[in-house]
Length: 416
Image (cartoon, rainbow, N blue to C red; front, side, top):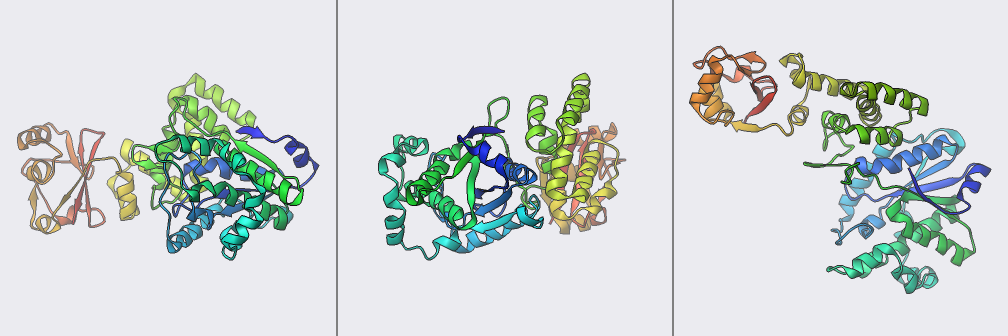
């Protein structure tokens, strides 16, 4: 996981308990799997006996970090930021131990020390210590200045704001280490420099590698967007499937980064996996561990049942255990159609239902042919005749019909 470590950091960590922090900007009301590397860094840090601080950036979230960005992001209102902050706090409590004595995790919000810091005080007490030359030399600044969009003064000052966070935590919470992704190195080092120049203090930096897939593409993105830790944004089933669908090469890396299994256990699984890759031992262990850590055992069991429902022999009654959002999450990516609940109450002929009211079949002729061949089902029950009629009493949760062409082609019909 390690990318860069400032000289002297290891020696400091080996001396005794150190306080260190990682910042999370609340740009959304949920963290996503891209944040998991930093969460795992804090978990390892705490397990090694050190004291982790999770900084949620109520102030920096108002500014926007230019690192790795090609254009300035939208600034959020205070209300939205506060909502996001509370949501992110709740998620972080699932991973870190906030009640374990001397090295209990703590959460801080940089808005608390910036809210009464005037602009004039900031440029006098902070700005004078860091030269423009020093700030311009940062890679994230250079890239933006060379690009088409340029860089606003707001974003240019971001590294000073983040640098002051480090100074404040060093001064008031004895934080001697800041950690983050490798794209944060410049911002972190600005903090160590501010501590040195302002108070002749010493602080350290450690960064992790940015996680990429073996094919070089960005980790944590799917065709439908980011994979979130919030069940409302990414259902536990979709979350589980994201990890289960990891390639063999990536699974070997991810199980080391995102789980806490011992090396011996992982290496034994790898031997089994290489002997029978189709069993997907690594992917299953990876997906199970992270899904339970993020969503809990009950949601993991539900995700397994969802997989078995789609690819195995679990009956339609399983869907009655799910709420509407979970049903929609289960069938995300599956073609879905909306029909009139009032019309269904009157009764709709199955051929019309599948070829006119929806596009499960391109034509009524094709629908009749496949129904006659016994290859079509609704709610996992084979359609007996092309003359059958369906009513609202067939709806699951009073809202859904599940159509199948063959065993694996699903279609969701929603009655509204």
